[in-house]
Image (cartoon, rainbow, N blue to C red):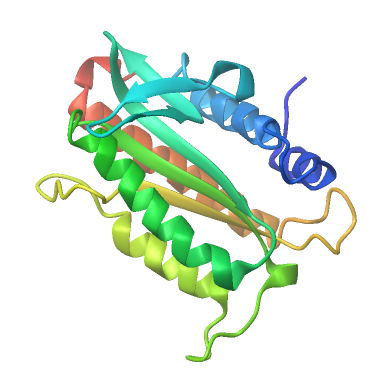
Length: 203
């Protein structure tokens, strides 16, 4: 049965914070979207995380496309549902560190980042911006990696999915049409970069 983005959000909110499978439906949704966009063979989910060797350590990535034993496409899936002010700075640091770790051994790898953020927990910062807006703005600053800008720690694309956990199931995604459009742009951006680096993969 095909999973929708709304299904993935509803499933996430039903699970305990420490549940290692809480993003399984989001992983399944992304795998299906890659297939629809012309890239079958993306692996991921709790039962199929892919260990990728980096310069400092090996890391299990949520989604991966591996060709000839080399990672070509990696996706990190996250959720921020509580304590946005305390979590956002750490998420940015973690993402850039994880990206740089694998890019030192595989500089051609394409990296994407998908994060679900609950705006029911959003708050204003001292600068007048919300934490979700601040987070998205900073993510977009690092999602600029393409030739000739190969700086380690940058990535190729991000997709921040804003939700409101106070709404009923099936209605929790904020501005679903806009989120869907941003999702299409996310998958297109990743695949465009992948095909530039691996032309034989182009459908």
